[in-house]
Image 1: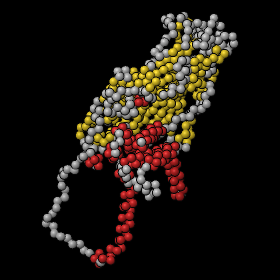
Image 2 (image 1 turned 30 degrees about the vertical axis):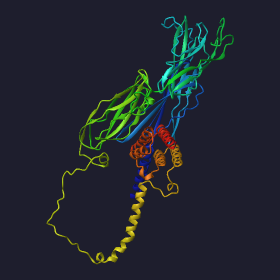
Image 3 (image 1 turned 180 degrees about the vertical axis):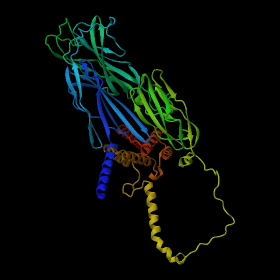
Image 4 (image 1 turned 90 degrees about the vertical axis):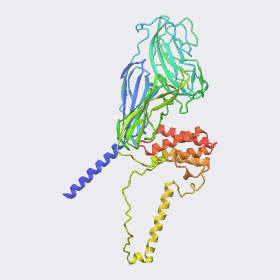
Length: 601
């Protein structure tokens, strides 16, 4: 009986352990739509949300959707760390337009994570026939010509029954690098469409494309009512200079049209056949991209362009010494006039009261970016967390601006901790008392020594153990200094070696091995710095040493700042509870390549 009970206990323990291992790496994925029924000439949003306890959540793979036109994709993320446990979720939102009326099924979205495959449920959509523009009630609008926005190159003529035309415009023709630019493609029609129009956007070469968002409305032009389908694309110029946004096209199928008196290539005017396919094309638009001015640029400016506000708060008002405190800084774009993708970091004015770990982006939406900064206090008392600030270029005012958060008061309890950090920051050891008193009245003490201790031959027995201890100590020291007994490491540091480490980092990233990836990135940058300066690898122990070595080698401040930044990021990923996700790994590798390339010149 006891043996039977023992087997049952072992089996139960195995099941519990396997369940723990399964759920420790489990993620979930779900799909939804903002409307399940819509007319043919409208759009809907299909959203896929991936959640789990990993920062490296994969992007879903969508199934084939031949019945829908796919427009822009939005991505929003949310990350939290509670009691050392991290949870994250990313929502991918796709704007879709049906091509025809009927009932359709959106196939499951599939993701693969750590060798496991997850999929969503199919989503059903019902598309009704589009209502004709001629049968719609007249909107309460005034009679006016078609609008011509700034930068518009319209292909249009006075409106009549059975006409269609297109127009492309931008909200401004002169923009700065990283400034938000909105390109709008408008399709005017008052004819009956046999299917939803198929829009083909320009290439947008030289711009960061942040996604396209369709909409529709009705407009009265010279007494004729038009259905206006618009696709607005948010762009950010990547570099200064003259840029050209090429023509956009829309393919439409029309039927039941009357023949007008005349027509030209600027319009799609159809007659005769019950169904005819035509392609409308807009003009190209020229954009002048201005460089950011050097005058007045703050020293901590990191490329943010727009108009922003910032606020900060701590997760607790009281904490113990050596207990982590999470400071959250929220950056918002004012009136949607800000490129949040250009806000890569915020500046925390650290003082000696706290040890600061690098900030991470915990949440990102279209109008908000949230940074979390982990702080640890080493001494008790009433403390003040310094302000967080952000410097940016305001293109509307054409000046650089800086916004600051308010200081945050926090009470730290417990006893002071004096450690290595205090000594590195210039702290000194002060004698605060004495608990061992030397007794001058003590006389010499002689211990008893037996025969073996007094006999010198006895100590020969310890020689092998002493040698073994010495060899082990030397091996441990060399290992801690990252010295490997290999042919490659016996060579002098070289840029080719740095590139080899970068290649190994890429392989580890492909295998989703975040720790090994960060380790190889560290070795790549270390190798490049040592190759540039000629110092040994054992001399480069971190960001401070790298900065000193590069400054003595005459390297520019820009490269020094980038090197300091990458060492700080690698230190964070080595010791933090989260790992570098796909985007963070890509950014880290790109920064390492930039540093190595600059040092090699």
